[in-house]
Length: 365
Image (tube, rainbow, N blue to C red; front, side):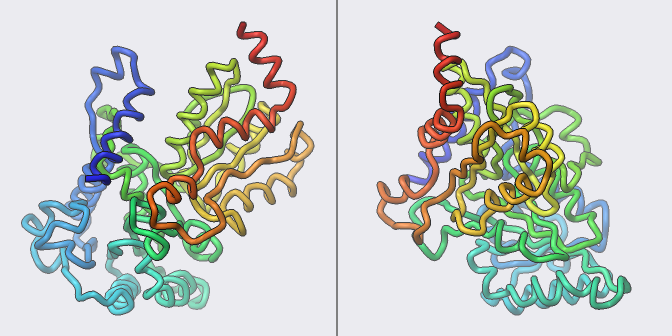
């Protein structure tokens, strides 16, 4: 019931961004249906593609992402596995080495730690160790990061974990466009891709047009998207944190502050060109993520800025908004305070802008 209410709240929050008649008249598609349609179209397009994981077939997937696919494609291409992540991840990597294109679903990426040897040592490194002779075209996908009420062992964000490893591409979609276009691109990619979804976004609907619904629609891996243009401060986020950033930007706009919101989409490769260009315009930067602060995605962005001429464009230090540096609490109130909130991001922006924030508010009056 709690999870249902959170999903409804997320839907309502997203719809609040879109109020023009054109957007209101647009078609809507949930993130879940975007992933489902992407899988369906790629299975139909390429006989080498197959899906395996726990409960993906007869049960239609733990989160119903694979709904209807087993009935359409049968046992050979939609495969239920035992509860052994190490086992079925190894099978999937071997199948990729042999020329197939497996999509390996983890019920949650927390369980992927059972299979991390296959992901890192087999999938990520084989192309290099074979001197380019053996590709491993595989997608590891499933929900990642904090959900609701699942506590310390089921709430981790693995974006920084996997992005640390050369040989992997790491994707973190936010909305329907991201989920559909990036999953199709990941399945077609010749290299191993870690595809980090978010459980709380599955039921959220976003507007889609005919371009997004086209069977050949792809979102390029390694390219970020500016979700909201702005001139005063840049906020960089990924996955569900993009929603937090957009809500914070709406609050800041009431104070006369225009924040530019960047949806990273890809964690590795990281689109530093889009980030640098935005910082050269706004001269202020906040990174936002639901993962832990130490060695996180935001920390990497800070380092990239420091190592580039863009550093000299900053008028204030970069500010990181992250999850609290503790295992996720189970208590509802503590869980809410362990993740960055809209008020936290807005407050950080005011601190980074300093006196400029006051001038913007005064000008608004």
